[in-house]
Amino acid sequence: MSENRVVLITGANKGIGLQIAKDLAGNGLTVLIGSRKLESGEKAATSIGERAHAIQLDVTDQASITAAAECIRKEFGRLDVLVNNAGIVGEFPDGTPFEERLKFNVPSQAPLSYIRSIYETNVFGVIAVTQAMLPLLREAPAGRIVNVGSSSGSLTLNANPEFEYRNVFGSAYSPSKAALSATTLAFAIEMEKTNIKVNVVCPGFVATDLNGHRGYRTVEQGARQAVKMALIGPDGPTGTFTDEDGTVPW
Ligand SMILES: NC(=O)c1ccc[n+]([C@@H]2O[C@H](COP(=O)([O-])OP(=O)(O)OC[C@H]3O[C@@H](n4cnc5c(N)ncnc54)[C@H](OP(=O)(O)O)[C@@H]3O)[C@@H](O)[C@H]2O)c1
Image (cartoon, rainbow, N blue to C red; front, top):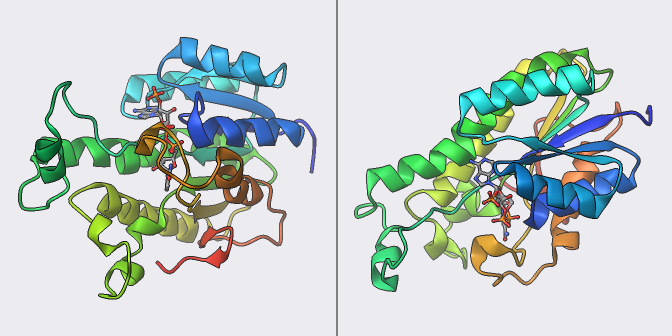
């Protein structure tokens, strides 16, 4: 494939997204560091080198998304790969006591505003960014979309009473990742007759700000499956849910 491919990674100023950007730059791609704070994106881009460029992108802000798509067309003229990586587990007002925070994961007690905000980023943000970037991706010789999901959103795993992490399946984060998997499949089905392949990956439990660095995997390990799916060739899969070990049940 041509070496002037361009990839946009959302939420790439830190964590798994930053590592995905580093790895794809290492593979010769031009990487666009989507960051809701431009300054953080610029810092991240500088740490990668000349193949990286920051772009302001808040996935919950349609004006920001539209401006990013216009900027990519004007400045780079193409987009080959989109990695929808930005995601949140929920943001709490400062000083929220721990017992209060625990209630947020209980479906019967979670404030609807909290649930909505997580879906806004993890699901609607992905749909909005994908819709905005698709005109560019359709023009690319081999468009790729990789969504960063989570096996914690697997309905098959969590429906099993023996599944050891079942208690994590709560009000919003895991269901939002289940919705992201469903959305991935919907886009994959729509794109079946095009050159665009759409897949969702799970990075595993990775030490990042998202989980207070409790994860046992490194960002290097967490980035691998997304990078692999970003670089698949014409015979590569579409409409799949995988992690480094293989297929994840939907
Ligand atoms: N870490 C894990 O164990 C794990 C497991 C399964 C799946 N995942 C998924 O992996 C992805 C990356 O997570 P991470 O662990 O690397 O977390 P992280 O270090 O907290 O990074 C999350 C990134 O998303 C960005 N972001 C949040 N809301 C945004 C918005 N509205 N617009 C644009 N960017 C936004 C953050 O930007 P700011 O710096 O501005 O906040 C940050 O760059 C997420 O989708 C997460 O659900 C992580």
